[in-house]
Image 1 (cartoon, rainbow, N blue to C red):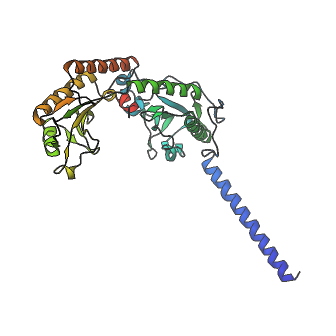
Image 2 (image 1 turned 60 degrees about the horizontal axis):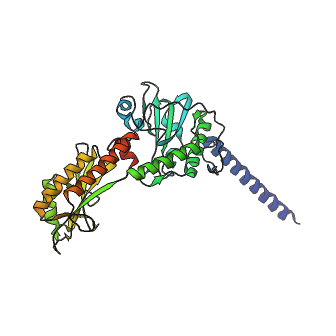
Image 3 (image 1 turned 90 degrees about the vertical axis):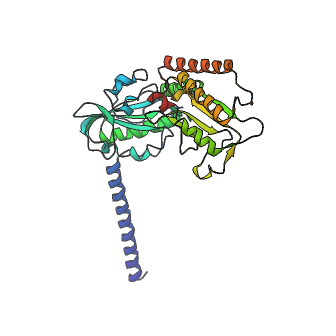
Length: 353
């Protein structure tokens, strides 16, 4: 082997060593910066009960906010934080050794949409000693955080695997910032989620009455617009007319019976074989009273649009039939209140979304 070949081999070996050292140094710097926030794998809660990290755990304290005591809690907590409840959320509490801003939760913010259910972080302020929703860019100092994952919405219950993934993420952050944690049992939480989802499925009632013209007649959309306007109903982005309360929340809505949305640019030329008034029972306050209101509007529309009130089989609904529907609505309200979820409350709108 010539001296030139030996020199080239030595140079090549030196370059390889330099690249390896540089890569090791970059990886070490990355690990020091991000700690254990990002894990390569997560435990499956269906097969493992152990905690996902060595962060010290303390006893889970009772939450001030509860599903049955929302108004009182709102005076103590930021409204969104007041809704957090162990029966409806998987809440991990972090006790900080040193007061810190929400940016200390780096690693949580960009993953908050990964779990298929709403997630939020609430912090206990160092100065005013009140819980408020924490914002990643905020400068407020907090002594504790509650990181919460909602258990149920209209998409169903959270899965045990998602709960485990969420736990691993938060405990990884807690370990990095040296925070003590209070972590509910995943299996118990999952069971709560299943039970709450079963109850919500039973209470999730949408009541509709159809307004259909006789024979094969059609209702021009222009007349529907005028009639809806007289009832203070407005066409919203979902293609339905909504009657809103003072807080901008829907009391009931009016849709095209054929499921084709109403659109501003087609109203002049569009006609339909019928319309439907809808009451989303869990999401309105005093649902029996709102049903009465909806039926008064229905009878006004009957007179104005020359339509009949019928069921899904185009059979006219009698007064007794309407009374039976109202009784069922009142039954749903009673069951929800007994379960600590008041229809139309912020908690109900949260769970039935």
